[in-house]
Image (cartoon, rainbow, N blue to C red; front, side, top):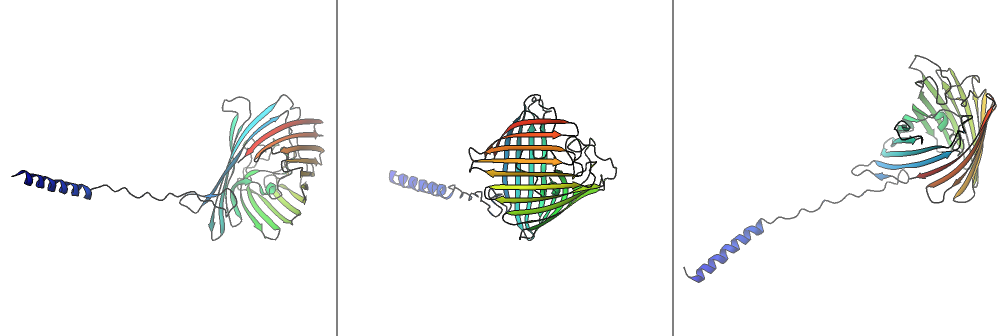
Length: 355
């Protein structure tokens, strides 16, 4: 074989190898398209679509720090500074169905009372866990008796004289006529507290019948500037109840309310007439308040409450928002309990960041 033939044969072999390598070359796969989080504005601000679903989710919460000189609910409680830190997480979901929006609400709360960090003084609470569809709410939420009339004023210690119960398991139907008219019917868990008292420390009724329920019903009407609502509740264990009515008005930057309640038995407490720390209201109780905005960052509120048994509660605060979603709120309260001939002043400051 001459040199020329050897060179030609080598070139042919190299060409064949190169062709085989070209045929076996690895081709990079095309990247899959990235699915970005989409904003869901059908249910209000803050919602986004859970990737891969048509369910919208909203995440929020707040962090709070309170410093107070005494306890507005307890006489002779001015024994040194009291502090509390709180964190709350909110999770709301919503999706469209043939019956309207299907929604859920979850609210969790973590409190530390500032005593010492041993785990005992940190508490965890589930404040809300409910499902909402076509006007129905099932699960844990504040009692319709308190929620329907919108609690009391924009005051930290607004329920020194209690206006009704809060967290309770329930099946509730809310009707909204779209013309200002609204109504509510609620069946609520009536089982007693484990220690035989309500949340205010008042003695509750002992009953072994676990099939009893509490019942709430209410009607309301509102226009642009005024609103009126009335709600009644029946406590099946106490076999008593209460009726409450509220009138609201808005006048530019100023809002005001007047609320009154009547108990079917003024000598005892029930789930809808809880009284105050030291006893029942008597036959009736009233609350009233006014709030206003001095500017976009500064507001103030005043609330007064009084009962048939001559318990008097007053509270006033300032609300300062130095930056968006940050609240600094000093508040002063005074409570006078005629039943024990005692009174109590309290001053406090709240720092709260909402997100």
